[in-house]
Image 1 (cartoon, rainbow, N blue to C red):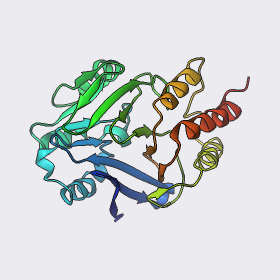
Image 2: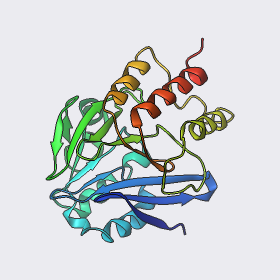
Image 3: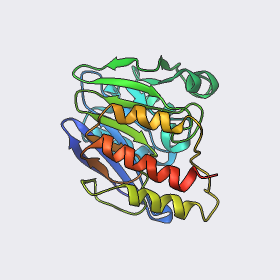
Length: 243
């Protein structure tokens, strides 16, 4: 049975991480402790007992108020209904496309729909929703930027393989390139598209000037987030945008 580690990567921001050796991949959720606690990513249903235990080490799981995620996928929101059962006041928070085409049919309670650039306040924290269609993938994709900490919840961007450190200041771009190249050799090839709008979305994320990047898979990262995103964008164009 895998274990889930809990690391406070910023004040009241907790990285809950489970390494799955068969996939050589970490699956991370992020819990933000506040007046209205928020969990970004639920993990798959099979991980729910582990993630619930990890959340319980920080807050009473029943007090969870918001559940965020990037797009409709098992590791993003597969355990959404389990969390809605445990936390009676909890509600998913996502973009309109996700809510209308998937979430509101799947979930036991309707989602709070967030418009592009709308801010969700949870007490001390301010989560700005950015619609990012097809970034990392899925027309329903979006991300949250917590303004008071400069933290970007970036889902599969900066995806890294292996059981890596919880937090790093080392360059993530080459780690991400390695993951793209490795995935390109097998059934998960083409899991990230490069569309005519991709660069504009990257530029918009860089303009937020994050200083903390919180990928689902791999180390959280501290540093000049705008520069990191621009460097990532150049790598993505090189690997995916030719032709």
